[in-house]
Length: 350
Image 1 (tube, rainbow, N blue to C red):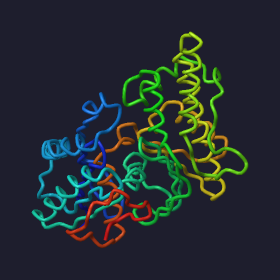
Image 2 (image 1 turned 90 degrees about the vertical axis):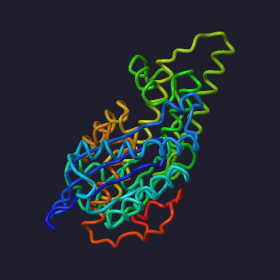
Image 3 (image 1 turned 30 degrees about the horizontal axis):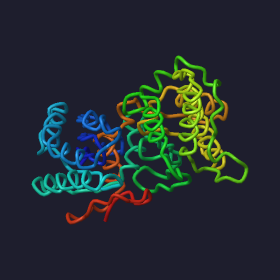
Image 4 (image 1 turned 180 degrees about the vertical axis):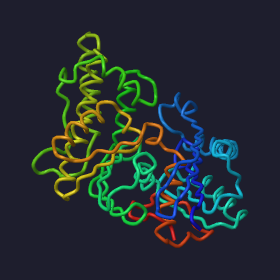
């Protein structure tokens, strides 16, 4: 077949995503539809994602989101040639909803099913924005649950972790600092907005794991979060007002500084000239600005998908499924389980 339609289903956390892409004979992938239903408002009063609420929200949203994606693409379910679904990592109950739905659709349509890795989807989605990736590239994945540096040697074929967080993910640190400052959940957008009004040099917050004996490519944001909390407590005990814009700007600068410095260093050490940044935190204005500056100085090409594609969505899973299909990989068995701890090197569950 010269062209194939791949449907992707994402339900690893609090977004129900359904995407459709067209895979051409030469391996290029074109986005046809990207429908997302988020349950973030239902979690806001708890200050974080509640797994049971997320699972129930996926159950309610799956069929309507599927209809919206099909309407957007102008396709029918009968046009689908393969289905990809997030098999992990993620919340167990949330993953089970997506996996069960994908199995049902694959069985009804009699098309191959690919249980794929959520993290690989965040890499593959960039091909929908900027076209094919080089054979070797580095991906910086930053979100509420993940902060990782990934060596990509063929999208859908081989991904190796070269660095990860040893405690809090970057997005998780944003949420916790937002809570400290009484800012809304999720914390990324309000902190970014406040930071634009503040001085990033006002407070010298620590840069975790940047000492000469620390792991070269790993991250740590728990200490930074604690430092912000202690600084705020000290100011409050002294009866001083908290300069929220300055705190946000200084905190954000510390996060962006560490992420970009380690990403550029890893790219140089591995002789890589292309860096992809994805995940929800990739939409942060300071992270993208500093990454552009440092990549330009190092002669590294920077690729960042548009914000909607950076957050969790079905399009990224459809894109990864298309690359896996093009590579000739065998489909996943229909009895495959959801795996909350799926390792990044497992791109397709078999």
